[in-house]
Length: 420
Image 1: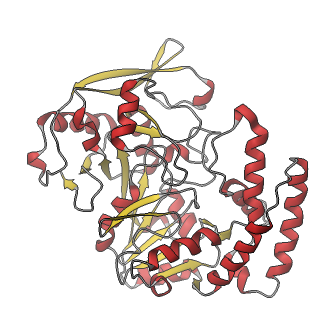
Image 2: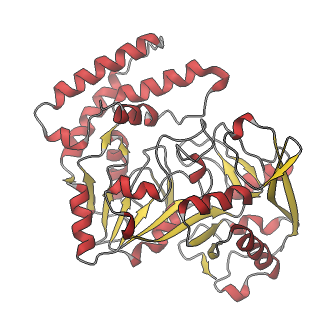
């Protein structure tokens, strides 16, 4: 049996904490897509740690953590993360497993990412410059180096061949930076990666499922960044939706039971791209300030706005969401009035559908107002103690999107989650 936790917005929904919260109920936590452009923030023993590639179940002893074949893996980032996790007394080599089919990000992927983004000028998509897009391009172009290749004698030859291919692209993009330091760090990290548990991922996870083990599949980014269903071209390079679990881990669709979608009580977005409910005013600044809305990976200020129910209903539909988890509800505690987007006004016509290409349309959000609750909710433990105005806000969302908010996160701590 496989349950899924994924993002329903543009990423940054607080999935790391939610995976950490549910992890004790599962035997295995598995990342199924994305790369080091993800940043899942956890608080362990009161200390903050951001995981970029290691599954968020790593801090639960005796839980198997798998990096699946749908991930693109940066060995350098992984080594740093493993060192950080080990500082908490966790034996990474004991409970972290990596699929041999997982594709590797090499230094020239990062160089191509940077050079390509610079070449786009004002049309840049807001890449994190981690080499994600070029790595996935080599995957679909059948040029990639995979983790299993590290154990083969031909690895060095494969690397040189790929390096020469990339150099031609870099020459065309007039990229002249010296990346020798990146390569030195890369090969040190490759030696470390070889020391970890490299497994035949699809057999490994299916064998565990056949034994009755419960798997929690952890997604990165969010549905509105999906390569097919997101706000193209301002998207990530992988399938961030529940269907990506099957291709990213090698499990059959009938194994997936519960799809838990995570949404903030409002909306944020990092980087470029359409954002219909974005607030360019004091309210947007207040959301950013109170929510500490800065990218976990990049540190970039997040753009902030009211919750977009048109997009949220859409993402619940494409994922088959069974449970909605609302995070950062406490950020709205201070606001006397709230708004939600219930439709898009496009060229004078009202629509409740996400259009083909948002970036080419002038979308005006149709907003509905709600009274805020003006109560500090961070210490609330029981659903009946939540303010009535918050309950009305949540019920309206439930009715609109056709799925129910089952949990509300009211602070960054592990214990700050209220079951409804």
